[in-house]
Length: 217
Image (cartoon, rainbow, N blue to C red; front, top):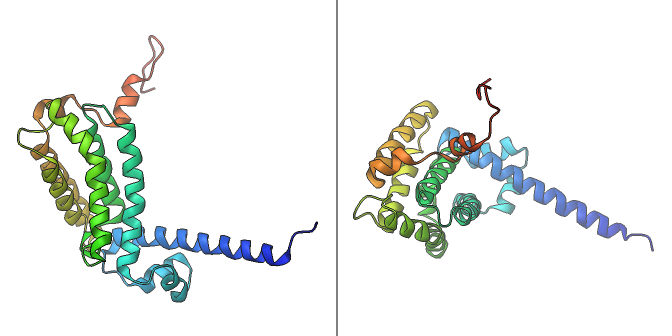
């Protein structure tokens, strides 16, 4: 039986809608990172090559857009947290992973705080749940400084997010790097930071090399 032409049209429209949504989210991340969270939504629509009508059809408000970006980041954070389960340095890895996400999308917490209270609370709870077992392991392993608890780490995440905002990209990058260093030293013990290797460095050191070969060659 030949396919229904109307069904083809419907599937094509759905595909276009999904692609538009993906482009809008990518453009919004880049715009927030480059120009701050107050960037004009029309600029995001232009960067995504869609109309303002399409933008508002997908995201009625700036808050909706920011919440979607944060929720997508949380999906990645939750997957990464599952991968790090049981690792003594997992709490450092996940903290650094989250700060990388902040740097890539800029500060959106000020926008999120204006969103629906239930939405904001749900995102906060998901963040806490992702970190909770890794914080507990970090306490047992002596990775976290004495007295540091989950709420301290969540506060540090907010501090890191604030340093990722601003319209001057060069200044913002420097501020985020410096705040990252300060927060890292405040949360984690010197011994843990000396022993910890970022995931890329750990993979490189574990890679076998041929005898007599320079691994940098």
